[in-house]
Length: 427
Image (cartoon, rainbow, N blue to C red; front, side):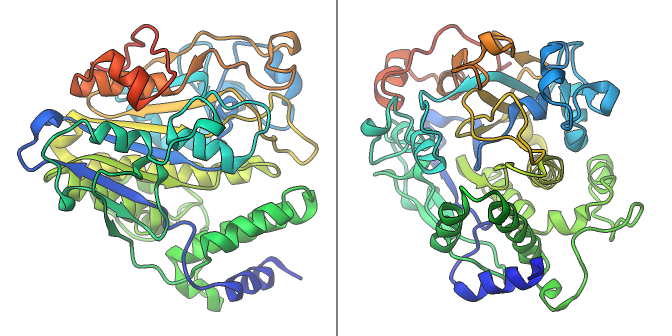
């Protein structure tokens, strides 16, 4: 059975919802109130992003010894950041943001989640913002933050997509919106496939590839009938997005057709987000999948990088001057193993990476207490050792942007969190 036949079988199982039409939510107050003019966008990267591949510590020579098929460092095309870290070439569209001081990273970070390495528990804990799975709250940490803001109204918070963003679940009011797409697979169907196929490398990879194709077809329904594919040959730009230098940079991504990606799920989510943030909305959250790279990681990383790049650049383009008051945080449930596996991928790990971007951030820096990747330096001798709680970066963003009291952040919004010292991620 070829991949397209397998895909059509999956589509036939359910036409209720598209897993790439992911939730997005907004909140704000008509009179700005305590939120003021600052905007915060949280992007949940579902699947466990490999931070060691996205921002590669090539200056740590031990990494190249355990990653021989996953290219590491500028000598293999990565973009040097600071002489120790390099940005995976798949993210080259975002490199100008680093150079402009509008993007940075927090490395060797994680939630308090340990050892089980389940996507579902990991994502639940990330969005709940609690210290232990058994203590996870019914409301998410963004909702708990919003509960501290007086004057919120029903039409100032939006959940966009056919699923629910747990990070914004709770008493603070949320309305709904979803982009218009054609090809669909229910979240329940996607989760069932992931669970059933997870321990079978052959079918797991086939399932991941089929879902990747489904995500592409969602942005180009005509491809289901053998029509135009998302992937195009080098030099075929597929049209002109416009938008000045940023639009031109987005179109410079061969072989991916950025014009179609920009009009696909990630582009639509970002465009709708920017539209609301230019008005009364002050807080936004949505998610992007595709980060579970057990096999063929280089290819999967290119797809995921394209979606995230389009989302961030579209936000920047559409927000205009509001971008200068915006902070974007991209977070994932856990990192991946230090060593690569036998299928040119990586498995579920612990320490990972967070990205921050926007006109309100102090970019051009990788914030980390680097633990090293020697076997004796790893967590359980297999994973990157986390040296800081990723929740602290969200907490410091709240404190810096909105002035929330430290004790409120550590006890109510993120129970059990030690904020630690200010990482200096905001201007």
